[in-house]
Image (tube, one colour):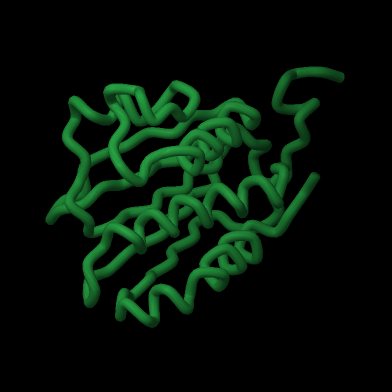
Length: 161
């Protein structure tokens, strides 16, 4: 299914504008290489909403959150960066890769179904979810999806005739 990338991202951000406004958090959006993309629009929008919701939850009032999107040859990369406490490297593996389980030793309060669902969306699109440090404090959640290059069909990408 083909969806307009800019509309998809902007609608996800608009859903959480009220929370950002109440916390006086500035949300910036940067989209490179927009246009139509072949993704499940409802699932990807929900994944962006979940990542942005977490970013707003953990970012202190008056700070910033950013959403950066790059659509390149064969990939769609969506990064949601917060100004929260960050996530120590040793805890990242426990947050990703398993079904949510409150007894999981790597899990901590507030991490559960949202990140698990985002990972499933990534996996369903041939991609992955990663966690990085944000310069100046906070975390970056990087959602990578395999998609057709702008103007390319799946058949052309895979070499089929």
